Amino acid sequence: MRHILRETLFLVWFLAAWYILALVVSYALYPDYKSDIIDTKESDKTIFQTSERYIIFALPKILSSPKKKIFFIGASNVRDGFRPKELQSVLPEYEVHNLAVSGSNITEMHDVVNILQLLPEDLMKKSVFVIGIWYGSFVDDEKHWGTANSSVITEALRYGLYRLDSGKPKLRVKMDYLSYATVLLRPCLFLQRLITKVYVYGDRLRTFAHNLLRKKRIDFSAVFNPRRPGLDEAYKRVALRRWQDFMGTKNGSFKDEQFEKFLDLSKLVNKSGAMLLIVDMPLPEWHRRGSPYWRNYQKKKNYYINEALKLGNVRYVDLELEIEDKDFRDSVHPQPEVTKQWGILLKTYIYQDEHRSTTL
Image 1 (cartoon, helix red, strand yellow):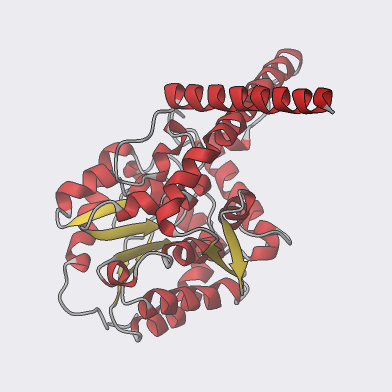
Image 2: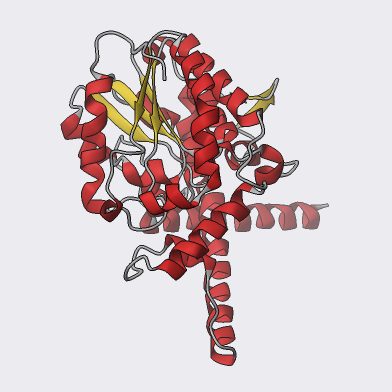
């Protein structure tokens, strides 16, 4: 019996020592991010690594300041197009958070808003939600997620801090304890980062070996390569084909599913008392001209945006035709030097006294 007890205590001591070591190393390599601004483009600099993980652990940081909040929500074009540090000088009365997740459709944006609904009611009433949409936001769930949850919900459920209640994420712990839970989970988050790094570098080595043995082919990931020297016609064809594969339908058609969810999302923000600013995100002219999805999106969106505008305290701005082609680094993302101008274009709408009721 004593032998079993001694072995058990040794095992507990051994595991505790490794836990403490992982905790110390995690703080050494990824110190607690000091900024109160949540910017998912900076996720990889934090212990959280991914945008989704950063969001689900971010609520205490959002509560750390009494200032009014602006939440930018959308896909990677919103993440890259509206930079919090640049916008703070443009919108000094607000604390600007960018909670965009690459590849989001409307369902995932809805999930992010549902997580933010866990914040206090009085804070929500002082907040502004900027929802960036474009035709890629309306890819249907079956194509995008299959039978799984969105990536944000998957991460929320992974650590046991959240549960689903009627499809909505709810905290299992009190908001005040979420920061402590984050500290306790740090060794797990650190090991997850370490495993991911090993996988990524292993994949790069395999790719390098493959390219040594075979002639390099066109890589679709080049669609998002900011260092690409010029957007030639071959690149544009690859990009348009990539977006066709992403959408997964023929002839630029859409299902109603995501448009209905967009209207539900608008009602959810409106019910919370927050202001909603809907932003049609810009695309380069060659992308608009070459995409049947863009053309059909122009026809289909009008009814749903007009219905959202009828809710009150909802505003709409169309940036699609405001930005020149030279301001894009690829098929959807802006050049870094023009992003502040994108934010300035929104300032009038955010500070507008009366809600925008103009229909499309």
